[in-house]
Length: 307
Ligand code: CP
Ligand code: NVA
Image 1 (cartoon, helix red, strand yellow):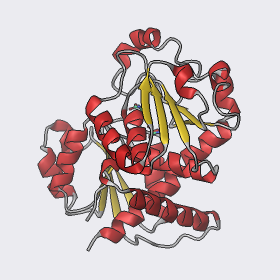
Image 2 (image 1 turned 120 degrees about the horizontal axis):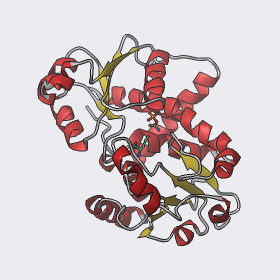
Image 3 (image 1 turned 90 degrees about the vertical axis):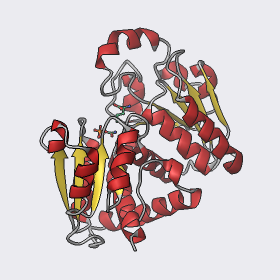
C-alpha cells in the first residue's frame, strides 16, 4: 500500500505513470465514459482548513469513479475536540477505503498515515501541496511545454514552492525561485531537492531577484503572499513583498510563449496583476479543472497498489 503525502516519496517514473493514467481517465471523462474504477469505495475527506477546489474535485472525482466522498470538517468530528490522531486514523481507516486530509502539519499528516490501514492523500499541509503540483504538471504537458521546461516561481517560499522543488528535482527540469528576504524556502527541503537534482539533472536556483529568476522562463507561477493561517501578518507581508507582483513588465522578461499558472485562490494586484491573470485565465482555469482529472488518476493508481 502507498500513501500520497509528498512527491519526495515518488520516483520520476511513478509521477509520469500517474500523469499518463490521469490523461487516459480525463479523455474517458470528456467522452462521458465513467468507468467504475472504484465501485462502492468511500473516500474520507478531512478538512481542518477551507477549500473550494480540493473539496469539489475530490468529491466529484470519487463519485465519477463509482464511489462516494465523505466530507469531514475537523470542527464536526472529535479530532477537533482533542481525540488523538492515532485513534481517529485507526477508526476512520477501518470504515473507508482511502482518506484525503488537509491540515496544518505535515508531521501530523504523516502520523495519521502511520496508523492508517488505507492510503492517505495530502490535500495541503504547511509544507506541501502535491496534488496541486500534479495538476500543474498535467497542464504543462497539455501545453506541450514539458521539454526544456524552465519554471520561475516568484513569491513566498511556502507549501507550493516546496512542492515545485520536489517536482523539479524529481523530473529534472529547471526551477528558479525568487522570494523576498525572510521568506525563503525551508532549508531542509531545499537540501533534499538539491540531492534529488544531482540524479535527475535539474537546475535549481534561489534568489531575491524576480527579474533574474523569470528570465527565459517557459512557465511562470506564483501563489498568495498570505497563506491560510497567516492572516495576522497581512500588512507586514504586503510591504515585504513589494516588487514581487507578476505584472506585464516582469512577464515580458519571460519566454514570449510562457504560460502563467496559479493554484488559486488568486489575489489580483497583489501577487499577480489583473491584466496578467485575465490574459492567462484560460490556462489557469484548465489548471484548476485538472485537479479533478489528476486526483482521479492518483486515487485509481493508489487503489491499484493495494495488495
Ligand atoms: N488550490 C487549492 O488547493 O484550492 P482550494 O484551497 O480551494 O482547495
Ligand atoms: N499557500 C496557500 C495555498 C492555497 C491553495 C495556502 O497554504 O493557503
